[in-house]
Length: 336
Ligand code: TXA
Ligand code: MG
Image (tube, rainbow, N blue to C red):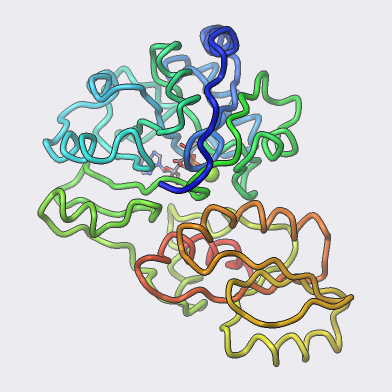
Protein backbone atom coordinates (compact mmCIF):
# COMPACT_ATOMS: atom_id res chain seq x y z
CA UNK A 1 0.00 0.00 0.00
CA UNK A 2 1.22 3.54 -0.78
CA UNK A 3 2.94 6.31 1.15
CA UNK A 4 1.94 8.04 4.38
CA UNK A 5 2.85 6.00 7.43
CA UNK A 6 0.50 7.44 10.02
CA UNK A 7 1.60 7.93 13.59
CA UNK A 8 -0.03 5.99 16.38
CA UNK A 9 -2.30 7.99 18.62
CA UNK A 10 -1.36 8.07 22.30
CA UNK A 11 -3.26 5.54 24.43
CA UNK A 12 -5.05 8.19 26.51
CA UNK A 13 -6.52 9.78 23.38
CA UNK A 14 -7.70 6.41 22.12
CA UNK A 15 -9.24 5.66 25.54
CA UNK A 16 -11.11 8.94 25.45
CA UNK A 17 -12.43 8.25 21.94
CA UNK A 18 -13.49 4.69 22.87
CA UNK A 19 -15.29 6.01 25.96
CA UNK A 20 -17.20 8.49 23.84
CA UNK A 21 -18.29 5.63 21.56
CA UNK A 22 -19.49 3.73 24.66
CA UNK A 23 -21.54 6.78 25.64
CA UNK A 24 -23.28 6.77 22.26
CA UNK A 25 -21.33 9.73 20.87
CA UNK A 26 -19.80 10.20 17.41
CA UNK A 27 -16.07 9.80 16.77
CA UNK A 28 -14.46 10.48 13.40
CA UNK A 29 -11.37 8.38 12.76
CA UNK A 30 -8.84 7.80 9.99
CA UNK A 31 -8.87 4.64 7.92
CA UNK A 32 -6.53 3.76 5.07
CA UNK A 33 -9.34 4.62 2.58
CA UNK A 34 -11.12 7.74 3.85
CA UNK A 35 -12.08 9.13 7.27
CA UNK A 36 -15.07 7.43 8.89
CA UNK A 37 -17.79 8.87 11.14
CA UNK A 38 -18.11 6.22 13.81
CA UNK A 39 -20.76 5.21 16.32
CA UNK A 40 -21.35 2.11 18.46
CA UNK A 41 -22.95 -0.26 15.92
CA UNK A 42 -24.91 -2.07 18.64
CA UNK A 43 -26.60 1.15 19.79
CA UNK A 44 -29.40 2.26 17.41
CA UNK A 45 -29.66 5.71 19.02
CA UNK A 46 -25.96 6.33 18.45
CA UNK A 47 -26.23 5.05 14.88
CA UNK A 48 -29.13 7.41 14.22
CA UNK A 49 -26.86 10.33 15.14
CA UNK A 50 -24.68 9.40 12.15
CA UNK A 51 -27.64 9.85 9.82
CA UNK A 52 -28.52 13.25 11.30
CA UNK A 53 -24.92 14.48 11.28
CA UNK A 54 -24.50 13.51 7.63
CA UNK A 55 -28.02 14.40 6.47
CA UNK A 56 -28.12 10.88 5.02
CA UNK A 57 -31.39 9.03 4.31
CA UNK A 58 -32.06 6.28 6.88
CA UNK A 59 -32.29 3.52 4.28
CA UNK A 60 -28.60 3.81 3.34
CA UNK A 61 -26.72 0.98 5.06
CA UNK A 62 -23.46 1.51 6.97
CA UNK A 63 -20.29 -0.55 7.19
CA UNK A 64 -19.51 -2.16 10.57
CA UNK A 65 -15.78 -1.88 11.40
CA UNK A 66 -14.26 -4.59 13.57
CA UNK A 67 -10.74 -5.36 14.84
CA UNK A 68 -10.56 -9.13 14.31
CA UNK A 69 -12.18 -11.72 11.99
CA UNK A 70 -13.31 -13.56 15.13
CA UNK A 71 -15.89 -10.80 15.56
CA UNK A 72 -17.52 -11.64 12.20
CA UNK A 73 -19.89 -14.01 13.96
CA UNK A 74 -21.11 -11.16 16.20
CA UNK A 75 -22.57 -9.50 13.11
CA UNK A 76 -23.21 -12.14 10.47
CA UNK A 77 -24.74 -15.60 10.07
CA UNK A 78 -24.24 -18.29 7.41
CA UNK A 79 -20.73 -16.92 6.86
CA UNK A 80 -19.30 -18.60 3.76
CA UNK A 81 -15.75 -19.96 3.69
CA UNK A 82 -15.06 -17.30 1.04
CA UNK A 83 -15.39 -14.60 3.70
CA UNK A 84 -12.63 -16.16 5.80
CA UNK A 85 -10.43 -16.67 2.74
CA UNK A 86 -10.77 -13.01 1.78
CA UNK A 87 -10.33 -11.89 5.39
CA UNK A 88 -7.12 -13.88 5.66
CA UNK A 89 -5.72 -12.35 2.50
CA UNK A 90 -6.93 -8.75 2.65
CA UNK A 91 -7.75 -7.79 6.26
CA UNK A 92 -6.83 -5.47 7.74
CA UNK A 93 -7.39 -3.66 4.44
CA UNK A 94 -9.64 -1.75 2.06
CA UNK A 95 -12.25 -4.47 1.52
CA UNK A 96 -15.82 -4.61 2.87
CA UNK A 97 -17.83 -7.83 2.75
CA UNK A 98 -21.62 -8.07 2.55
CA UNK A 99 -22.95 -11.02 4.58
CA UNK A 100 -26.29 -12.17 5.95
CA UNK A 101 -26.90 -10.20 9.11
CA UNK A 102 -27.36 -11.64 12.54
CA UNK A 103 -30.88 -10.91 13.87
CA UNK A 104 -29.40 -8.84 16.73
CA UNK A 105 -27.78 -6.29 14.36
CA UNK A 106 -29.84 -3.09 14.55
CA UNK A 107 -31.77 -2.37 11.34
CA UNK A 108 -30.54 1.22 11.66
CA UNK A 109 -27.08 -0.10 10.72
CA UNK A 110 -28.21 -2.08 7.69
CA UNK A 111 -30.73 0.44 6.36
CA UNK A 112 -33.48 -2.12 6.95
CA UNK A 113 -31.78 -4.83 4.87
CA UNK A 114 -31.10 -8.36 6.07
CA UNK A 115 -27.47 -8.17 5.02
CA UNK A 116 -24.62 -6.36 6.77
CA UNK A 117 -21.35 -4.85 5.51
CA UNK A 118 -18.23 -5.58 7.61
CA UNK A 119 -14.57 -4.65 7.33
CA UNK A 120 -11.31 -4.46 9.27
CA UNK A 121 -9.54 -1.21 8.33
CA UNK A 122 -5.78 -1.07 8.06
CA UNK A 123 -4.98 2.30 9.60
CA UNK A 124 -3.16 1.85 12.96
CA UNK A 125 -5.27 4.54 14.66
CA UNK A 126 -8.50 2.86 13.48
CA UNK A 127 -7.24 -0.49 14.76
CA UNK A 128 -6.20 1.02 18.10
CA UNK A 129 -9.67 2.54 18.47
CA UNK A 130 -11.47 -0.68 17.49
CA UNK A 131 -9.36 -2.78 19.83
CA UNK A 132 -9.86 -0.40 22.71
CA UNK A 133 -13.61 -0.11 22.08
CA UNK A 134 -13.98 -3.85 21.69
CA UNK A 135 -17.22 -3.86 19.68
CA UNK A 136 -18.26 -2.98 16.14
CA UNK A 137 -18.15 0.62 14.95
CA UNK A 138 -20.64 1.63 12.27
CA UNK A 139 -18.98 4.24 10.08
CA UNK A 140 -19.78 5.81 6.76
CA UNK A 141 -17.36 8.28 5.21
CA UNK A 142 -17.26 11.40 7.42
CA UNK A 143 -18.75 13.80 4.90
CA UNK A 144 -22.18 15.35 4.53
CA UNK A 145 -24.53 13.40 2.28
CA UNK A 146 -23.55 13.48 -1.41
CA UNK A 147 -20.34 15.39 -0.75
CA UNK A 148 -16.74 14.39 -1.40
CA UNK A 149 -15.33 11.90 1.16
CA UNK A 150 -12.71 13.35 3.56
CA UNK A 151 -9.12 12.14 3.35
CA UNK A 152 -7.71 14.38 6.12
CA UNK A 153 -8.88 15.36 9.63
CA UNK A 154 -9.17 18.96 8.39
CA UNK A 155 -11.67 17.83 5.71
CA UNK A 156 -13.77 16.16 8.43
CA UNK A 157 -13.81 19.35 10.45
CA UNK A 158 -14.86 21.36 7.38
CA UNK A 159 -17.62 18.85 6.57
CA UNK A 160 -19.08 18.15 9.99
CA UNK A 161 -17.86 20.79 12.45
CA UNK A 162 -19.70 20.50 15.76
CA UNK A 163 -21.85 17.59 14.55
CA UNK A 164 -18.98 15.27 15.52
CA UNK A 165 -17.84 14.88 19.14
CA UNK A 166 -14.23 13.89 18.53
CA UNK A 167 -11.87 13.70 15.54
CA UNK A 168 -8.83 11.42 15.63
CA UNK A 169 -6.14 12.77 13.31
CA UNK A 170 -4.12 10.08 11.55
CA UNK A 171 -2.74 12.14 8.68
CA UNK A 172 -3.73 11.84 5.02
CA UNK A 173 -5.35 8.55 4.00
CA UNK A 174 -3.03 6.27 2.03
CA UNK A 175 -5.60 4.79 -0.37
CA UNK A 176 -7.82 7.84 -0.81
CA UNK A 177 -10.96 6.16 -2.21
CA UNK A 178 -13.52 4.05 -0.36
CA UNK A 179 -13.10 0.30 0.15
CA UNK A 180 -13.88 -2.35 -2.46
CA UNK A 181 -17.26 -3.90 -1.57
CA UNK A 182 -17.86 -7.58 -2.35
CA UNK A 183 -21.29 -9.08 -1.77
CA UNK A 184 -20.99 -12.65 -0.48
CA UNK A 185 -24.66 -13.01 0.48
CA UNK A 186 -25.73 -14.59 -2.82
CA UNK A 187 -24.66 -17.60 -4.86
CA UNK A 188 -21.90 -15.74 -6.73
CA UNK A 189 -19.59 -13.06 -5.30
CA UNK A 190 -20.55 -9.64 -6.65
CA UNK A 191 -18.51 -6.46 -6.89
CA UNK A 192 -20.69 -3.62 -5.54
CA UNK A 193 -18.06 -0.90 -5.36
CA UNK A 194 -14.59 -0.95 -6.94
CA UNK A 195 -11.64 0.13 -4.78
CA UNK A 196 -7.94 -0.36 -4.20
CA UNK A 197 -8.35 -4.15 -4.09
CA UNK A 198 -9.25 -5.14 -7.63
CA UNK A 199 -11.74 -7.85 -8.54
CA UNK A 200 -9.16 -10.13 -10.27
CA UNK A 201 -7.36 -10.32 -6.90
CA UNK A 202 -10.63 -11.52 -5.36
CA UNK A 203 -11.16 -14.04 -8.17
CA UNK A 204 -7.63 -15.36 -7.69
CA UNK A 205 -8.20 -16.04 -3.99
CA UNK A 206 -11.70 -17.49 -4.35
CA UNK A 207 -10.96 -19.27 -7.60
CA UNK A 208 -14.37 -18.25 -8.89
CA UNK A 209 -15.62 -15.43 -11.15
CA UNK A 210 -16.86 -12.20 -9.56
CA UNK A 211 -20.03 -10.67 -11.02
CA UNK A 212 -19.36 -7.11 -12.13
CA UNK A 213 -21.60 -4.05 -12.14
CA UNK A 214 -22.71 -3.01 -15.60
CA UNK A 215 -20.88 0.31 -15.76
CA UNK A 216 -17.43 -0.35 -17.21
CA UNK A 217 -16.96 2.31 -19.87
CA UNK A 218 -16.09 5.97 -20.01
CA UNK A 219 -19.28 6.62 -21.93
CA UNK A 220 -21.03 9.15 -19.72
CA UNK A 221 -24.51 8.38 -21.06
CA UNK A 222 -24.38 4.69 -20.27
CA UNK A 223 -22.76 5.55 -16.95
CA UNK A 224 -25.54 7.97 -16.07
CA UNK A 225 -28.29 5.53 -17.01
CA UNK A 226 -26.70 2.71 -14.98
CA UNK A 227 -26.32 5.05 -12.05
CA UNK A 228 -30.01 5.90 -12.08
CA UNK A 229 -30.78 2.25 -11.35
CA UNK A 230 -32.38 1.80 -7.91
CA UNK A 231 -29.93 1.56 -5.06
CA UNK A 232 -27.11 3.32 -6.88
CA UNK A 233 -26.47 6.89 -5.89
CA UNK A 234 -25.71 9.09 -8.87
CA UNK A 235 -24.81 12.09 -6.76
CA UNK A 236 -22.24 10.55 -4.48
CA UNK A 237 -18.81 12.14 -4.27
CA UNK A 238 -19.88 15.27 -6.11
CA UNK A 239 -18.20 18.67 -5.98
CA UNK A 240 -20.59 21.64 -5.84
CA UNK A 241 -19.02 23.18 -8.95
CA UNK A 242 -20.32 21.82 -12.22
CA UNK A 243 -17.85 19.11 -13.25
CA UNK A 244 -17.42 17.41 -16.62
CA UNK A 245 -15.21 14.62 -17.88
CA UNK A 246 -13.27 15.31 -21.07
CA UNK A 247 -11.12 13.00 -23.12
CA UNK A 248 -7.41 13.85 -23.29
CA UNK A 249 -7.44 14.67 -27.03
CA UNK A 250 -10.38 17.03 -26.72
CA UNK A 251 -9.10 19.00 -23.72
CA UNK A 252 -7.32 21.86 -25.52
CA UNK A 253 -10.13 22.52 -27.96
CA UNK A 254 -12.74 22.23 -25.20
CA UNK A 255 -10.94 24.72 -22.98
CA UNK A 256 -10.61 27.21 -25.84
CA UNK A 257 -14.32 27.03 -26.67
CA UNK A 258 -15.37 27.19 -23.04
CA UNK A 259 -13.12 30.10 -22.17
CA UNK A 260 -14.86 32.20 -24.79
CA UNK A 261 -18.01 32.06 -22.65
CA UNK A 262 -16.97 30.80 -19.21
CA UNK A 263 -15.01 32.91 -16.83
CA UNK A 264 -12.76 30.61 -14.87
CA UNK A 265 -12.17 26.91 -15.41
CA UNK A 266 -10.51 24.38 -13.14
CA UNK A 267 -8.71 21.47 -14.78
CA UNK A 268 -7.93 18.20 -13.04
CA UNK A 269 -5.50 16.28 -15.21
CA UNK A 270 -2.74 13.71 -14.97
CA UNK A 271 -0.81 13.94 -18.19
CA UNK A 272 -1.89 16.94 -20.26
CA UNK A 273 0.69 19.58 -21.11
CA UNK A 274 -1.80 22.44 -21.00
CA UNK A 275 -0.52 25.58 -19.24
CA UNK A 276 -2.41 27.44 -16.54
CA UNK A 277 -3.43 31.07 -17.09
CA UNK A 278 -5.48 33.69 -15.24
CA UNK A 279 -8.69 31.91 -16.26
CA UNK A 280 -7.44 28.37 -15.94
CA UNK A 281 -6.39 26.71 -12.66
CA UNK A 282 -4.76 23.31 -13.03
CA UNK A 283 -4.10 20.49 -10.60
CA UNK A 284 -2.03 17.65 -12.00
CA UNK A 285 -2.31 14.30 -10.24
CA UNK A 286 0.13 11.40 -10.73
CA UNK A 287 -0.34 9.28 -13.87
CA UNK A 288 -0.33 6.05 -11.86
CA UNK A 289 -3.82 4.91 -10.78
CA UNK A 290 -3.20 4.28 -7.05
CA UNK A 291 -1.26 7.49 -6.59
CA UNK A 292 -3.95 9.41 -8.51
CA UNK A 293 -6.65 7.87 -6.28
CA UNK A 294 -4.78 8.92 -3.17
CA UNK A 295 -4.85 12.58 -4.20
CA UNK A 296 -8.22 12.66 -5.97
CA UNK A 297 -10.62 13.83 -3.25
CA UNK A 298 -8.26 16.46 -1.83
CA UNK A 299 -7.76 17.83 -5.37
CA UNK A 300 -11.52 17.93 -6.09
CA UNK A 301 -12.09 19.64 -2.76
CA UNK A 302 -9.35 22.19 -3.45
CA UNK A 303 -10.75 23.03 -6.90
CA UNK A 304 -14.31 23.12 -5.55
CA UNK A 305 -13.32 25.62 -2.85
CA UNK A 306 -12.14 28.08 -5.50
CA UNK A 307 -15.80 28.41 -6.60
CA UNK A 308 -14.87 28.37 -10.26
CA UNK A 309 -17.43 28.32 -13.05
CA UNK A 310 -16.60 24.84 -14.27
CA UNK A 311 -14.32 21.90 -13.51
CA UNK A 312 -12.97 19.83 -16.38
CA UNK A 313 -11.58 16.41 -15.54
CA UNK A 314 -9.29 14.67 -17.95
CA UNK A 315 -10.64 11.12 -18.55
CA UNK A 316 -8.27 8.53 -17.14
CA UNK A 317 -7.58 5.36 -19.14
CA UNK A 318 -10.47 2.91 -19.29
CA UNK A 319 -8.81 -0.15 -17.79
CA UNK A 320 -8.97 -2.26 -14.64
CA UNK A 321 -6.28 -0.35 -12.75
CA UNK A 322 -8.38 2.80 -13.06
CA UNK A 323 -11.80 1.24 -12.34
CA UNK A 324 -12.22 2.73 -8.84
CA UNK A 325 -11.10 6.19 -9.99
CA UNK A 326 -13.36 6.08 -13.07
CA UNK A 327 -16.29 4.98 -10.92
CA UNK A 328 -15.84 7.99 -8.60
CA UNK A 329 -15.30 10.40 -11.49
CA UNK A 330 -18.48 9.22 -13.22
CA UNK A 331 -20.37 9.76 -10.00
CA UNK A 332 -18.81 13.20 -9.47
CA UNK A 333 -19.94 14.25 -12.95
CA UNK A 334 -23.19 12.24 -13.22
CA UNK A 335 -25.59 15.11 -12.80
CA UNK A 336 -24.37 16.95 -15.92
O1 TXA B 1 -13.70 2.74 2.81
C1 TXA B 1 -14.81 2.67 3.34
O2 TXA B 1 -15.56 1.71 3.20
C2 TXA B 1 -15.25 3.84 4.21
C3 TXA B 1 -14.41 3.82 5.50
C4 TXA B 1 -14.86 4.86 6.50
O3 TXA B 1 -14.42 2.53 6.04
N1 TXA B 1 -16.63 3.81 4.49
C5 TXA B 1 -17.56 4.09 3.53
O4 TXA B 1 -18.87 4.07 4.00
O5 TXA B 1 -17.29 4.33 2.37
P1 TXA B 1 -20.08 4.68 3.19
O6 TXA B 1 -21.24 4.60 4.11
O7 TXA B 1 -19.74 6.01 2.66
O8 TXA B 1 -20.31 3.63 2.08
C6 TXA B 1 -20.80 2.36 2.42
C7 TXA B 1 -21.30 1.68 1.21
C8 TXA B 1 -22.56 2.29 0.68
O9 TXA B 1 -22.47 2.40 -0.72
C9 TXA B 1 -23.61 1.28 1.07
O10 TXA B 1 -24.69 1.26 0.18
C10 TXA B 1 -22.82 -0.02 1.04
O11 TXA B 1 -21.60 0.33 1.57
N2 TXA B 1 -23.44 -1.01 1.91
C11 TXA B 1 -23.40 -1.07 3.25
N3 TXA B 1 -24.13 -2.09 3.72
C12 TXA B 1 -24.64 -2.71 2.65
C13 TXA B 1 -25.49 -3.84 2.46
N4 TXA B 1 -25.97 -4.53 3.48
N5 TXA B 1 -25.79 -4.19 1.19
C14 TXA B 1 -25.31 -3.49 0.14
N6 TXA B 1 -24.51 -2.40 0.25
C15 TXA B 1 -24.19 -2.02 1.48
MG1 MG C 1 -19.67 7.75 1.60
